Length: 68
Image 1 (cartoon, rainbow, N blue to C red):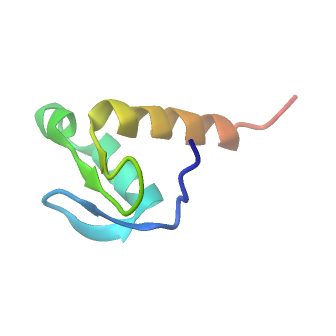
Image 2 (image 1 turned 90 degrees about the vertical axis):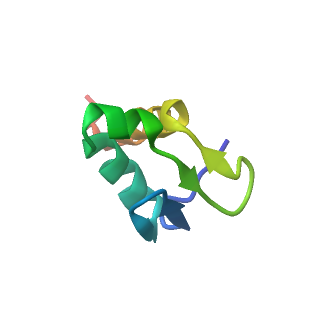
Image 3 (image 1 turned 45 degrees about the horizontal axis):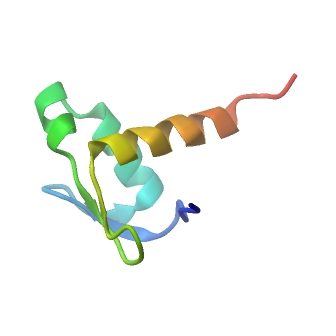
C-alpha cells in the first residue's frame, strides 16, 4: 500500500501537517500519547493507528539508509 508522505493529514491533538511530519511527530511523543496517536487522512485506510504509524516510520527509515 502506497502512502504519499506529502499528503495533508490530521494528527489527533496536533493539527494538520504532512503525513511524513505526522509520522515523525507521533514517534516522538511520550509513550502513553504515542500509543494513542491517530492520523486521519483522505483515502484508505482513513485512520492510521499507532501500529500502522510505526510501520510507516520503519519503512521510511529503511528507505533513507544508504545501500552498500
